[in-house]
Image 1 (tube, helix red, strand yellow):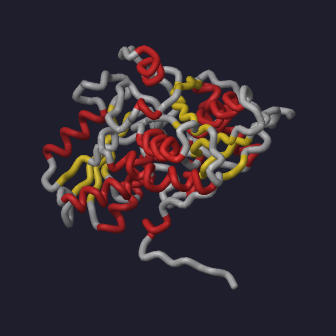
Image 2 (cartoon, rainbow, N blue to C red):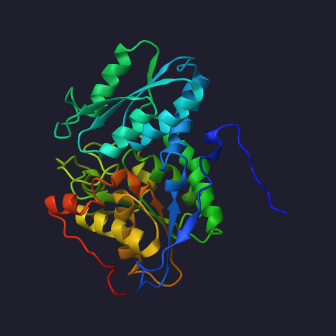
Length: 334
C-alpha cells in the first residue's frame, strides 16, 4: 500500500531533497560523484532552507511581528525563499538585487508580491548603492521591518548543520569522503562542513570560487584582494561574509564562467538535470577533483537551483555568444 504525506502548508516540503549519481559528465572518473538536488525545494533552490530558518528565528526572538516587513539583499534565490515564507505568513517583502541578476529572478520575486530594488553591480562593498548597504538602509527606514541579513545571520549555517548535513550523511550511508560547495553567504559550506567533520574528521571540505571572487585568495593568503566581476550568480563575494567559517574548509578551487556555464548545459543535456550556472561551477570542480582520487572517493556537491531561472542568460545561445562564451550544440563524445 502506498504511503502519502500531507503538509499544513508548502513550507513543510522544504528539505529532504534527493541525491543523484552523475554518470555521463564523470566519464573517466574512478570514484562516485553525487549532486544533491536542492533545485527540488519548493522555491527552486537551496536557499529555501535558510529562508524558512531565518524567518522562524526572527519570529522566535520577537523582532518579526504580525504584518511585518522582511528586507534582504539577495542575488535572487534567498529572496524567492523569503517571499515564499512571507506568502504563507502574511509578511511584506522588499529586496535589493544587483543588476547582473537574471530578469527571471526579478519577475519571480514580483510574482510573489515582493518589491525589488535594483542596484549597480560595479560598486565597492561599502558604497551606499551596494545592494547590502542599500538593504540595511531600507530596513532602518521602514517601520516594522527586519533585515534577514543572510550574510551574518547564524540561522543560515545552523539550518544546513541541522538539515543538509545530516541528509548527506544518511544518503551516503556515512561514506562521503569529499563535500564541495560555493560561498555566497558561506552558510551551506559552513553548516554542512561542520556537521560532516563532526561525524568523520577525515571528510574533506572544498570551497569553490568563481574567478573574480576574493574568497580563495583570502583563504590562501589571509589578505583582502580586489575582486572583479563575473557572470555566475549566487556564489563568490567581494568581501568575507560573517556566515562563512573558514576553519571547516580544507581548500578552495577556482572555476571560471565558461567552465561553469558549459557544465551546466552539459548537466541538462546529458544528465537530465536542469540547473543553473552555480551548479555547473560546482560540478566542474567536483569532476576535476575526482580525476585525482581513487575508486573509494564519494564526492557530494550541491545542485543549487533550477535552470529556468536562467533562460535569458546561460541557456540563451545569443546571450552566450554576445558575452564571449562558445556554445556546444551536441553533447561531446565520451
